[in-house]
Image: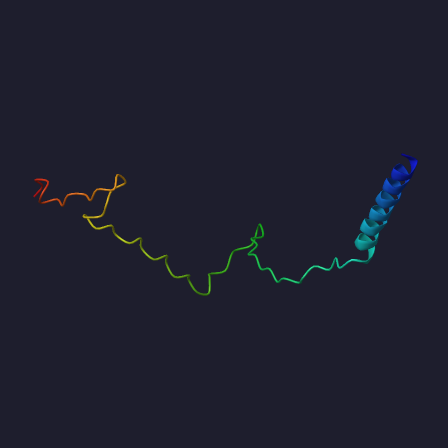
Length: 83
C-alpha cells in the first residue's frame, strides 16, 4: 500500500511540474488581429459618412401555391372563390 501511495504522489508532483513548465515555457503569444470600431466622442459633431452601405436585398416573395406547414399545397386565390 505504501508503494502505491508513493507512486501516486510522485505522479501528481510530476504532473504539477509539467503544467507549471508548460505555463512558463509554453507558447502563450496571441495572434495579432486588427480590429476597427467606430467611436463617437461626446461634444463633437460627427462627419458625414463617405459612402452609404448598400441596402439589404429584399426578401423573396412566396408564391401562392407554396406548401403550408402541414405539407399540403395551398389553394390559389381563384379556386378558393376570391376575385
